[in-house]
Image (cartoon, rainbow, N blue to C red; front, side, top):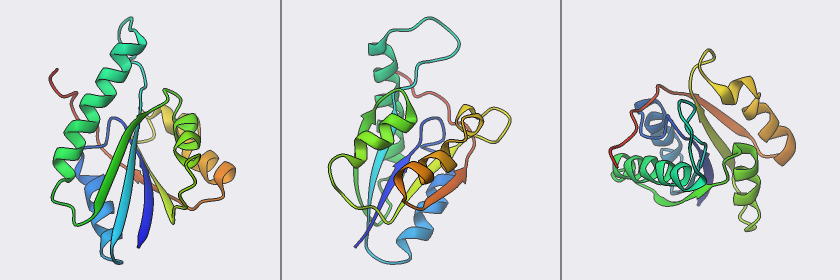
Length: 141
């Protein structure tokens, strides 16, 4: 059984991430644990509750789009800091074959400005698969 940790936010429901997960499933039975960091919106004042709610909406929408994926999927809303969200997910002791990090393209991606894929690989020692996706609209509340 192949186990993968998937970290995504604005790109979770997109076709690029779906294609990458389909390729991984082709290697055999797979389990994906999806973490959506509860990042706050950048265009207005917000509360922690609003950030978590928006992340949950993105997660629910993404899970709907991934429902036909031939794999077991678990999920959670994680810490607002994506690095901390990854570290928290790893605390449960599950060993992952790889961590899939889905980001926006280089210009608009805050995660790439933070060098997140490289930092995750360095800090965890787990291979990172970087997927560049397009932004998905925020699901309706």
